[in-house]
Amino acid sequence: MAYIQAVVSSLGENNVMVILDNHVSKPGWCCDNSDGNGFFGDGYFEPDVWVDGLTKMATMFAGVPHVVGMSLRNELRGPRQNSNDWYKYMQRGAEAVHAANPRVLVILSGLSFDNDLAFLNSRQVSLSFARKAAFEVHWYSFSNGQEWAAGNPNEVCARIGASVSRRALYLLDQGWPVFLSEFGVDNRGGNANDNRYYGCAAAVAADLDLDWALWTLQGSYYLRQGVLDLDEVYGVLDRAWSRPRNDTALRRVQPLQRPLRGPGYAEAEPYTVLFHPATGLCVLRRSLAQPLELGACADTEAWEYAPQQGRLALRDSPLMCLHAQGAGQPVLLGTPCDDDMSRWRLVSDSKLHVAVNASSSSSSGSGSGGGMLCLDVGADGQSVVTSPCRCLSADNSCDPESQWFKLVSSTRSVAANSMLAELPVKLVSSKIRSL
Image (cartoon, rainbow, N blue to C red; front, top):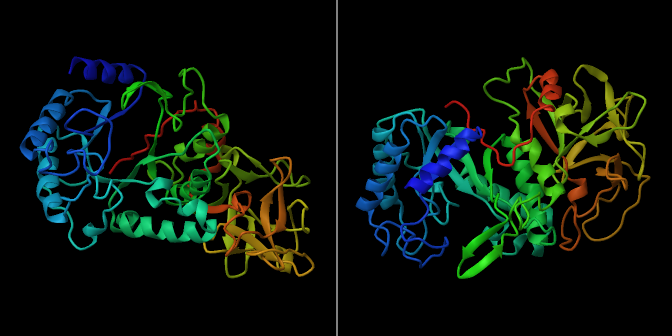
């Protein structure tokens, strides 16, 4: 216990908020369906002992202000799992934490390795307290095997994104806070399954302005599953814990660290941000005379999108519309706003391709966009151009991520964007807001 208290104390001294998470009852690497730690009544998971442990931890840190939450149990799983026992024991555990520490957030995880909260759609939790309970969900590429690498990315993104919404994110529409408490990728960059998944997951996180925690910070382990100094390829830090493992991967999570909406961000009218998930950058302009480019989302433009007209214009200059010039050409701001090259629509199952009809363009290959041009990133990695739409359907081998742009709603003041650019970069997000 002294070791845990020392770690929590050190985090507080460095202004890091803490969520305590009960992982396993028998120490070891987590998690497996048959490890005896998966569900209430398993060999190492005695409910009374678990509730007693929650009470002791909640009491120990009741007076520590930077301990802001307690997650009741990580990744419930295994053949014994069922919703009736979930309600019985999770409600009991939540009440025990609240009784010991009425200040702390109480975070409830779901079934099937924290992938499933669908059962709450028919029966909600019954708690004696209000406005301090939240739910958590995990989302990794491997939660769906190799579907991301084996299928068409747009179709897979639409299918799995809808599944995550049905199983967990629907709770947002019911007024419950939902915390994406684990997501992440192999930061070496060579995992196709992870790479395709990330762009979709980041687009969903930005669209819903989700609170989240990235797996993981550490670059290695003293000992894991009998292996000394095991490299953690999902780690933000390198094996020596001395620098970022992948600067690009670190940069692309930074826009997700800053809230787009919610308390403290109350502009009268929401505006649209053109977010590029694969790079973590947004579409902006340096001047009206220059082509648009990707840059820090803290410097983003305030766009306004009218889907019926297809007009994508600057909110404060509605006659300045996004205008395509042709295949391989940069997009510009200008007029008119009602010709084919200025009518933008979201195409593909993922709704992440932003396209215009351009009959003079040509494209070929399975899943191509025919006469459509899509927003894309230029060869310099910064300019915003239009290219023949690709990978829209059928083709499982191509990578559409350079053409994935998410139109995200924000209420953050545009002036605040530039001020946020001066904030220090944090490695892990902790944006749970007032409930």
